[in-house]
Amino acid sequence: MSDALLDRYGAVLLDLDGTVYHGSRPIPGAVEAVSAARERGVAVRYVTNNASKSPDDVAGTLTGMGLPAEATEVRTSSQAAGRLLAQRLPAGATVLVVGARALEDEVLAAGLRPVREAGEDVTAVVQGHSPDTGWVDLAEACLAVRAGALWVAANVDATLPAERGLLPGNGSMVAALRTATDSEPLVAGKPAPPLFHAAAADTGVPLVVGDRLDTDIAGGIAAGYDTLVVLTGVATPASVLAAVPGERAHYIAADLGALGATVAELAVGPQPGWDVAASGGTLTVSGDGGPDDDPLALLRALCSVGWRDGTTTVRPSGDAAAAALDRLGLG
Image (cartoon, rainbow, N blue to C red; front, top):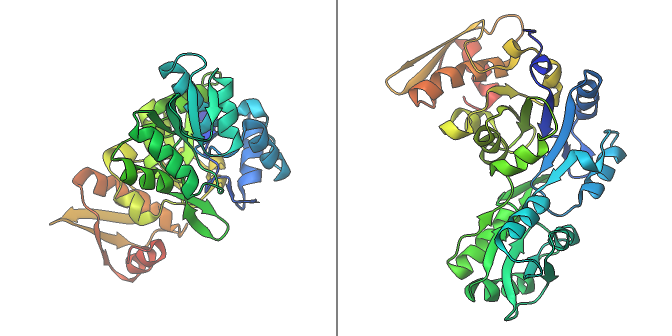
């Protein structure tokens, strides 16, 4: 078997916000990495929890950034929400929509009737991200959920990566409605496996790539796929090291440029130039990292030992180890 990462997979399932782009800007290196994957014959699928855009809109945004994309290559949480509602409700049922027009369109496509105000005929509430959601929208949803309507959330991402930093995501709005109703929604998007299974249905063995441990990585693992976490969005070295078993990625990378790397360069495990020993609830690091001087190599070594021993406290032994830990934000 080849040592090249992409020679092991027939497809990459890419998260968007925080992985491919930040708001309206592609993350440096993303266009080149995705284009190179296509040239190798690897299928590319875009899997997003953002329910505010239709697949056509997402594909248009990507092509505008220089990324080749077709609407058929896009899977969104609004599509997943529509499918979940169709499974639970009779045809023609009335659904109160809290979110963007794209979510409303998926409700229609599922054979259901979307509305924006609570009423006696509302049998379900579906909630997805929209920058225009306000108190009035949440109030209508609150009335419907309290009256017994089924509540479906497209996703529960607390934050949304953007050019200026992390902004409130759909999960923050869901939290407000949860507090007001003492209810819990069904979640249609990531980390639920169906969105990943739908994206990979017509591909070879997939690799899931994302920046969030609790959605991208947890969802990929739950779906039975290998995962790669990138540090261009929500995940940090500290959160990766502290990840619970269901959120531990197989590979760790700085960004999508790693798609061109080898398995040995990315896989969690022992690393040349670093020695990590666990004792007394502490990981002690020694070594100089070798000639590559890649701090993420140390993170992969730390995770291989820390995940096994349940240890996240780190102590350096030597100046080189201290400097590397500082670069990771673990000093």
